[in-house]
Amino acid sequence: MSFKKRLLSGLLAVTMIVVTGCSSSGGKDGKVELRYAIWDKTHVPAIESLITEYETANPDVDIKLEQYTFADYWTKMETAAAGGSAPDIYWMNAVNFNKYADNGMLVSMDDMIKEKNVDMTQYLDSLTKLYNYKGEQYGMPSFWDNNILLINTSLMEQYNIPEPKENWNWDEMISWLEDAKSKLPNDVYPFASYATESTQSGVFNEVASAGGKVISDDKTKALLNTPETKDGFKKYYDLASSDLHAPLDVSLEVGGSTLFKSEKALVLQTGSYGLLPYSDEEQSQVAGKFKIYTIPTIKEGNTSKSVIHGLGNVVSTNSKNPEEAFDFINYMSSEESMKKYTESALVPQSHKNVQDLFGKVMKEKTGLDTAIMSELAKDAMPLPNSFETSKWDKAIMDNMSKFMQGEIDLDTALENAQNEMQTILDKENK
Image (cartoon, rainbow, N blue to C red):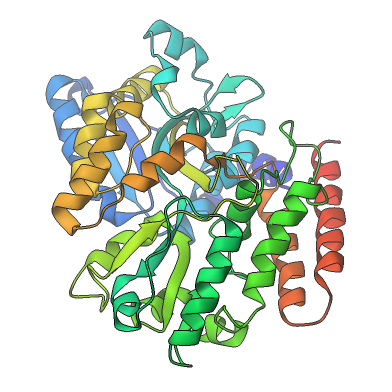
């Protein structure tokens, strides 16, 4: 059953709603009650603190925070939206955004943005664009992540491996890895990543570095067969299938992050959202023993070296109080609120004026120098997405997995992925 059919079915079968209760309206003592749903419990203290501040300044509003596991989150949101009981405000990601916006499940914020004179240029443009659908803004960008290289400084020192040069290119990295391999023990791999597990933390970053694109700006054309995109895929998967990279069976069985934590991988290409566990001395053997580097430049002169993704706060069309919901989101999106959020949750926020703060706070609280992340964010490629992102993303990964397992060559894998992705996009746009 299609998403739209499920939506219509849900509207006729409210009794099957998983998430109970209706979107908030009037509450106790005449207060406006708003429900706000998220999926990450580590953000709860930061958000609850801001809710308390907002409620103090707005005593006629009562905000209830609901936190679900990511595994349950989208099922609950979809079912609740279909039955008219979605939370007033909830977290949205780029993978699902187009689907929700297209099906009329989100409130357009354009009029409210104008009414409150919100300057959207104060946020990172790459993040704002993620939540703009057909020229209308449906979400306010919140926190973000991009992708980087973590390099173990302890292993470099132990095996006399020189530090990489800043702003290195791809060939320079490969030469550096080859030198490292000649010095490392056989059970320590020069490089680890998520070649068959994630495009976001894997190959899409090399596509960005090569100056390529995964999908056209109007989201109608797959661009896996363009020269720049093919070069990004080739560079990454040549490395992933070489003896410089942890073998596929080891990567899948142990996991890239575990290899890096246990000092069985010198370099890990990963998402910046994974930094905090590595900085916890009780959880990680490499706490304080690594530095952050950029993914190397593939196309000379190209400034993009990473994919960026950030969450957005959206208002449900089920909400009986969309203006009050937006007012709270606008409060959360202020420079002052985003400073407090950064300091509490240790995540970078979308406001341009708080980018340097993230690096400062991380340095003070964890010892990690993350300044390079904010620099990368300025020119990062927004995470590719469309109406059925998860379907064509899976098609790409399935074909790359066949290549990594030796079933097909890389050209065939790319051709198959291009054709399958285009078929999915053609169905989207009918």
